[in-house]
Length: 239
Figure 1 (cartoon, rainbow, N blue to C red):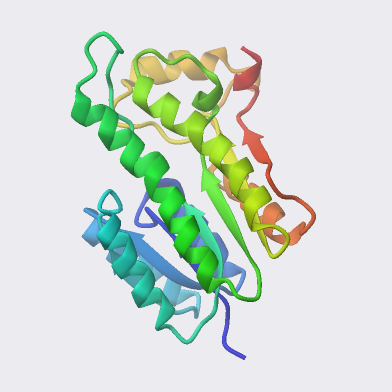
Figure 2: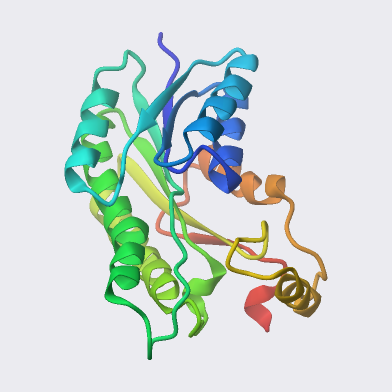
């Protein structure tokens, strides 16, 4: 039998890359989606293939619905059956609600919310023998982050979408979410601000990538979990 396929969006770098590598170690063939990070995608592909696992590079701008259609058409042609979709691609615009530009609002909602919905909708049609969809949200989904307003709203809505899809796609397809806390600093956070945020955490350190990835491994192995958001935040939600 062909190995199962796992499709990971935003898999070229950061957490998406870690999810892809973990799935490869578990024996899944990887559909490695990327948009602007072509070099990083190529390097990640090499790492996956060094594990003895095939990886397909899939370029698409997920803010364009027609590009999602094309991506899924390509995946449908693969010999390997699609069993897992990880929606990891995201953007984090900076903008207080008083000055947030419309294009930054749309950018967050289009990539962080609409794209996971369309990817899940279309991927579910390929999961004829069941499967798992995992949306990567954020602890910010439950925080009033005024500096990242469009991002926080999009991630909060994504958690709601996770529950809706879990009920709609049951019993053959499970849908869950993973909400990381502080893991990797982003370009929009200064080193000083990052240190301040980490110091506020009850555990006093950022997460290691493997600690976030282990939540995905748990969701794969425990087939009785659906409609849930697994929070891995070092206690961020307590402050």
